Length: 399
Ligand SMILES: C[S@@+](CC[C@H](N)C(=O)[O-])C[C@H]1O[C@@H](n2cnc3c(N)ncnc32)[C@H](O)[C@@H]1O
Image 1 (cartoon, protein in one colour):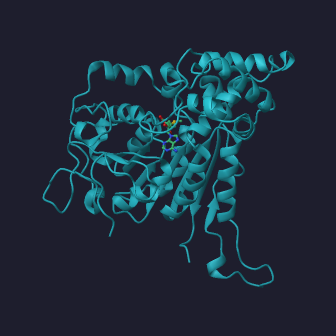
Image 2 (tube, protein in one colour):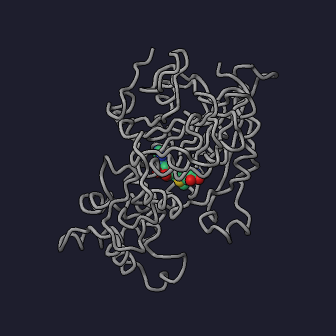
Image 3 (cartoon, helix red, strand yellow):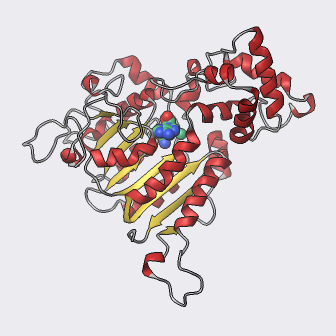
């Protein structure tokens, strides 16, 4: 039996990282005579029935941070302004809903949004499936706070968790769930993170070089550029940014920091621009785009987390359950493709005339290659330009 987590605090035993829970007034444990849902336990997943008030009109207000002890605080009006100001347009929304729908028809179906962000996909899923329950995971406490405001009308059907998505098995175990019906990953950064200039994700603004999605822990981009060796920086820029001029940029960074620590996003962007040949500056967008992507991936250990999370998601869906992943760069998409393709292949020895049941494919691919956004969607939402969507259905139990 898993040990219940105490709210907000403990180190997650599985990963050594913190995991905190955000539940809502009105959410109740079943089997405990209507007691408020507290520290997640095995009962915690039995959500209360849908609220009596209209789900479209928020009634209660969630916290400024996803710590449970703050969860009953009313949202200030400026916070609600933020919700509308930073609205992130969900990418390939119709396709995501279409792909997950067959798995979410049963009453009480559970869908995990592993990258809750601003809650755009989550809100649409909750509206489309009035009997479904949603677990929303994000490593960014600001995103969780804003999403919780947006999703307040669904308070009794949601559980929001501050965690890295590779902690999915721990999250589900603590909620007493052995399997779920659908899982969505919408990878990368949100418009909120890009728009909040002080977070340093954007090369277009003068801001401290931070780039942590979870600002409660971990090294910043400034730590990386000021402490990594030239060889390490070259590796990061080449592998995660697919940057042709990785070693030139890395050497320029190492040179510059002998004069002064590199702490500003706009200064780094200018240094990158100046380090690459003038003739190449005019093509492929802003010259610092790939460097910033690479640093963000390194700071947040994004690929390592994804490498653990995608197999964990495949293992967590029941037979008939579905996993949908939206990737925005080729390294992520390749990783997803590899895991899905391996699950969709038979492992029967080729010399055998019949397929052994234990070696039959575990997954069915739901997309032919990767789906992309239509030109119309890209015109309306440039963020959709690079999206690659892949999806699977689980078709048998593990042996
Ligand atoms: C593109 S946004 C999601 C937007 C969301 N689908 C919507 O419609 O509003 C990606 C979100 O995933 C979160 N995220 C990225 N990597 C994560 C990880 N490894 N674990 C948990 N959350 C992560 C980011 O903090 C960000 O809020």
